Image (cartoon, rainbow, N blue to C red; front, side, top):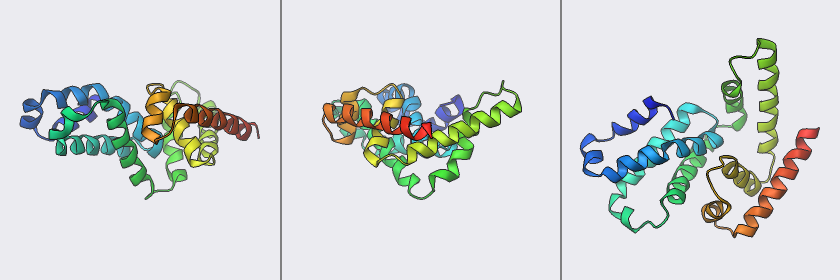
Length: 180
């Protein structure tokens, strides 16, 4: 997430952040990951930033429970994941694919190549949407490369071997769909 996004998280309450340095550390350490989680689901940078802010508002609301949380990273990702899924239900994914695809294309490419690349990205996103829900979820979480198979298993409430199997099937299904 950009510096503006991180600063906007801190507007929540300067005295609460300074009274709880752990929260400031959480924002600093995990805001980028939570942003990528939300962006992978929502495909809209502004909506993803809103999800990150909402996630840390939830953390503020549960400030007394923070010491009892054993694994902070999966807990925070789960909050952002659920918030993003809730927001996504309100908007069709194909409405967001155009913006995301355009934002992922390098600005150094000539216009014709940029259009072709954006088209390939939209095609890949559409193919991912056709995957079964659990396969798509496991693939999105894995694609961020910051979550281990064990962490994905915790988030989705499955065993590690089930996650490995879901990832294997998702990649094969995606490969088949992209061949066409």
